[in-house]
Image 1 (cartoon, rainbow, N blue to C red):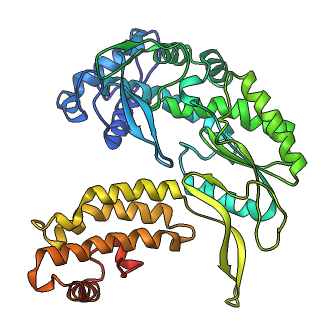
Image 2: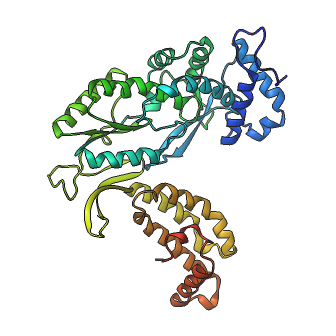
Image 3: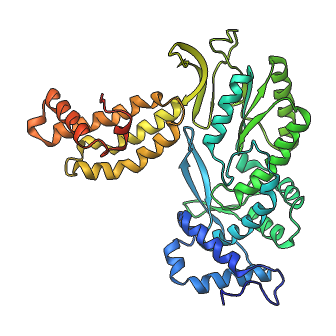
Length: 418
């Protein structure tokens, strides 16, 4: 049955292979159960029948999504939380089919400076391009759209989709997904009249498509001399002068209002890229983008001479958030674990932090890594009576970093401890 490539005698021409490939993507991402409590493993236990049911209903126009489950999670690059809408596994498969159709059509036309939720592009790519442009342009307009995923108007989303997609079933199911209510932990169903829930497979591509028309193309038409980097609803525009930055900000405010959105007043402003060569005065001389704070920092030239350059490094809010995680590990109290077990537990997480926040100006991450090492020193002192003293504990830690230099991921960069 799953070997058939095309549907037969159905209202809509959807390949069974599309449904199977969509499931493989859902399986790779795993994710939490939806309102039905079914996990990916349970879905896979009856895979053939489950996938046939999805294909049959989608091809017949009778796929109706259940409510999405509301879940609060920490923001990835900032403090606070965001509300996710988690679809059921079956619905995630169906959404992934539609997302694949849309992505194949729109990915080639997306702007090169749009980085969020796109294949082969990442937040670090955006940070890299932003760093280079901050050296060339003296002024920046940083912006963030207030509650973008909760506020984007449905009619404009569908208009954007219909500019690129001709299949009627894609629009049909998008309308149903947009209107699916959100079920909160207390069981209350909350109807929605705008927005697209974060956490659903189809939301990233339609959000990008909306912003492609509402921001990317608009800015290119109105301000072709102002390059930008955008990651979903978070972005930076580079300007040659304060006057131009003020014009961009004023026009952007109006444009967002016209498409039913609002700039976040606390996260939208003009910034002067002050450094050793640009020594003017202005109220704001730093900004944060994707977990990195851009500001004047000490750097060295090829001759080893120190100078001030406008550079990104891990933000204070990201350090604070990660610090809370490290504190919650309570490593120094886990004396029932071996050193190797501790390493296996924390290495994947620490490696992720080092990969992301250590890409630029990695020395800003050293105090955090030294703090982790400090907990390990305390673990040694708590676990072994003969190393209970401060000097003995530190000496043992230093010996371990020499004999087992790859045991903990952070030792590749720093072996000192607080």
